[in-house]
Length: 247
Image (cartoon, rainbow, N blue to C red; front, side, top):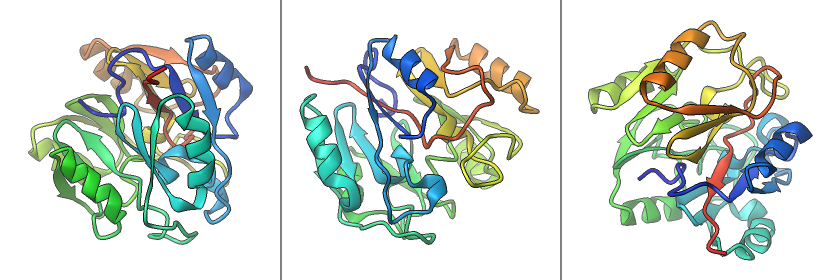
């Protein structure tokens, strides 16, 4: 099981602190407790609030967090029975100093540029029995929308090629056409989250994306329901990280 996909309906979600109130309200209507991220002042403005830059879920109720912001998330999430582990790598503004926790996951694998992955995160990924797939893409979670355990969507040509070689079902889409604060465009992985194994959460509508029909068909083939959290153009908010609280 991929930790980004809750084992039952998610009841906790970590969301970019700048997310529109409508997105947060629609998550709360699903009986999800929403934690808005705080700004990590050591990062570029475009990703300074992104959950998947500072946090990686080891499993459905255990996360590892960059030391820069650890105290806040430990205080906020431990009250829900979430185990919060402090990472080793202190994040910094310039690439690759900001990618240590942005690891993509599918069944049995972790995919990242492991030259720059946080060492403590690698330790826990190995404990999960995962095979490390090394690629040059450091923003590998941002670049991968997780559809289910064995399938995803990406605009990264090399990631698509590598995952297909490993037997995963991956849709390759055109880059761009996704909003991102202070940047020309964002990544498909950062626009989504998983409410449960059957339901994808999207930050907005895909209508303006040139691969809108292909994406919809890919999700339909895998019997996925889509919940649009907003009627605005889809935006990269650094993944909606969903968890299962123990309480």
